[in-house]
Image (cartoon, rainbow, N blue to C red; front, side, top):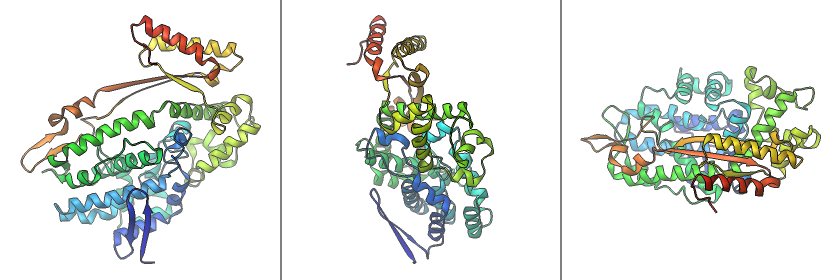
Length: 424
């Protein structure tokens, strides 16, 4: 078959042609076993327990990133035709940027302690199906793609920016896709205007024409809203806390007290020595099956978080960001006392999730405007973008429903004492 079409719910028909060498490379990479595994890795991890439509996969997302990378490069090739020679590297990097994700995507990284960037690089360098096809395209291409994904390194800075920057093809696709699948409407980007505004600065790096300023401001606001409303949703926080908890318990109990097949045993107790085949053998299906077995056969402290996740009998989370660090710890101690008096194991149902984030980091791949005469940092031109660089504090107290009323009363007392009006 000379042409292949993927009908994407966001981008429409994504067509790849075998007669185009870079697209033929993409087709062959898609057909490899490591890439097909991404069909079994949920894009948003356990977020389907919060947003019932959040069932899309890393496979679908990666095809979307390829599509956007191809469109973005077409725009830049009009400014520098020499960039056309970088199509194989860019297409491969766009497709394979998530190849190293473990089960449940970013949630799995926190559960198992494995980051996807190093694994993406290792798979590209060492897995025969990926390495051999890339090397057949051009000697040294496998290492070039691995360095781009793992370290953000590439001789052409614009190519590196399309793969990893404040405005890369990965971010643009996942904001659109995650908004679509969760049923939220914050992620509606002016994609056409953003792509049309892409340009090259005098040093060859990626820049934006000022005509795209409003669209990029909107994109950055959308990104912050998606993090607040989807990625850091309180129920998602609870699910991730339970997932981390159950893996920690399984590891502590050890192989004599926890059933695991040979693959999961190595993921639990020999993480530092995983080979490629064992890494690729774990996905949402295998991890989900172990949760089922542990719910039925595991010891109570392991069975409980599995049951809560599988039957959606989730813990609750209350916003404690307005409390000081000391007050949060005091309230956590009180909550654990309440849970113990209710006949529950406090360690398994009470916790504190704290995180700081910024919507825009000016000095980490910061965006620049170029109108053909003047190169200017985006935050210098936009007060809105400057405001997005402010630090956002998030803190959630996780607790069982049985003590929810008492926890709410104690929180309200502390907020009143601090002169803060409690949210209703």
